Amino acid sequence: MNEKSLAKRISSAFKQTDLFLLFLCVVASTYGMLLVYSATKNTMVEGQLISSEFKSMIVAIPAGIIGAIILSYINYEYFVKFFWIIGAVGLILMVVTIFFGVAPDARQDSRCWLKITDSFYFQPSEVVKLAFVITFAVHLDAVKDNINSIKNVLLLGIHAIVPIGLVIITGDAGSALVFGLIVIGMLIAAGLHWSYFLVGGLGLTAAIPLAWTTGLIKDFQKSRILALIYYDAEEYARDAAYQQNQAINAIGSGKVTGKGLFNGTYVQNAAIPEAKNDMILSVSGEEFGFLGAIAVIAIIAIIVIKIMLNAKAAKDGHGYFIDMGIASMIIGQTLINVGMCLRLLPVIGITLPFFSAGGSSNLAVYLAIGVVMSVYRQSKKAEEYAFSPANVIKFT
Image 1 (tube, rainbow, N blue to C red):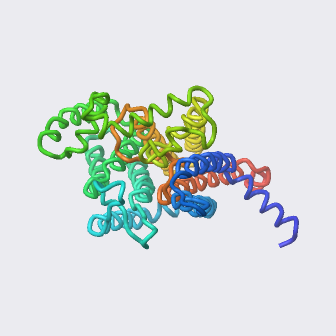
Image 2 (cartoon, rainbow, N blue to C red):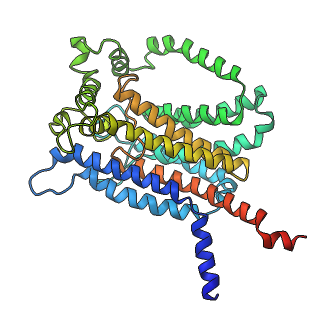
Image 3 (cartoon, helix red, strand yellow):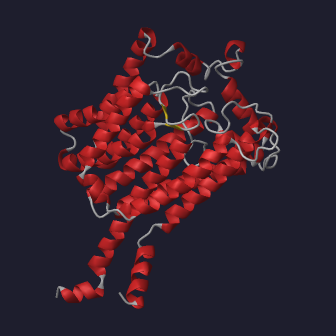
């Protein structure tokens, strides 16, 4: 291979890489690491340079970026071809978690982690989300021409209920809700008729009283729901509503431009429980103000829009549904996390993509971005093949 040919291949590889999407993700993670460092600065003992949470991000984010770049060079059709293996591995991971999962100190209600070492825990549901997106995308593409038949809707429902049910068994209600939002997003993208959503919504609404009275919704979950209404009542203000009240107070105290990095009164005095993950938006709100909090949401919004644009340009239905599923995953997690911080939704322990601490969540979101980049690369290859003058000459 001569130098010109090698240079041409390298140039083509860069053109086919979604560098803008990767750049946006790195910007988001850099901002997130800054917020996590600030949120955990008060926990470090004398002589300690970085917290364990920040250390996990230092490892997970570069590993995720490398993984994303590698995945971008693998044709996503291989994932489609072997979807049944990917799905089986996902189910096995969840079953193993049911039997051997452990609960971290901050989440005793949820045995959704696997202990790898004394200092390293892995949350399988994070990567199972991506596995589910791939298998569900294959299913949707197979039935897209007749998606509104009752048979296909029922089969899609069964497909979705299996992983959601396994996640619920581990006690991870937050991830189960994210799975549900992924399903809704992908079904909307597939063109499912609105009447099915109406029936499903009415069914869930009708089931709430049953779940409330039969114990399916646990007492601590009831308290978190009621805290949205009675947040200023003493009974809730000192317990179930405390975390959200502190987060909102911190965001409000930051006003427009914030108090400055490392100068947040609430953040630096550890007055916001789980500020490094569940309530990371409150850190940006207090220290960088309204503008800083809006910047967090804006960066995620631009990432989602870019993924959706990639979906629109995908060369086939598989790529389209995979991209829309990953976009739905990021949207779902963002809506839940922001809703928790603003006391619009109960606290259910969901991280903010790219911003919250957490090795598993950061690594998983980058692997998902890698698959999106693979769809982008293959669509660019298809465009080059279709419109290359050399190919036009060759086939004329």
